[in-house]
Image (cartoon, rainbow, N blue to C red):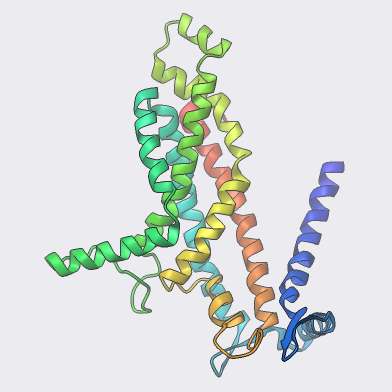
Length: 301
């Protein structure tokens, strides 16, 4: 009962924290005398936003000089972000976990070393390298490996950002599964399974996997944090029409002179609430992916 009440309180508190957080940039104002802290603009923005829920003004925003309605435009943006968060994350998490458990110690260390090297490269550099590689191959051979950005004429699902969003959860889950499998290899239940004449592969997948996979669920907050950060970068670098890109292109454009001039608080609120919804859906989807991986490897539900 206590856990249920705590979970419900988090569900109600989290959106309120997001709404207040979106108003925090308005607290700091700038002028000829320098920066100053004033809470009144933030409180006024909060009051206008709640008032605008009834008359519809909180659902309108500007891109340039054109006014848009969030109810009409947001579903497409949200779908694109959801697509790049759920599919690559679930694929990378499942493959990384399964491969980390399946490979023997020597191969696991070799692949792990290579993944550690690539994992250390910042994602924006990886994205630029992939774009340059696609352009180089196109210039050299005339073969178009992949589109380097979204142009509005093709499909939403692009190979380069999809591969990039898949790699990081794959590398993280592979390293984690390999390390935990090594720790569990000398446990009593593993020695008992060996005494029964079971093969090492069966022991790793069914016995060690049964012990390792539940602990992977505890790493979901870290994996989700990686994916959320990567989603911001991928949508911005590859010009994907996702919900997080609105935060930089419209809610907080940063193109006009003056401190936070052009900041659209209502849009920022909805974007951050959308990110919160993405996080919740991704948590459920990744948990399902881990459950299916556990059932496929160990036969347990």
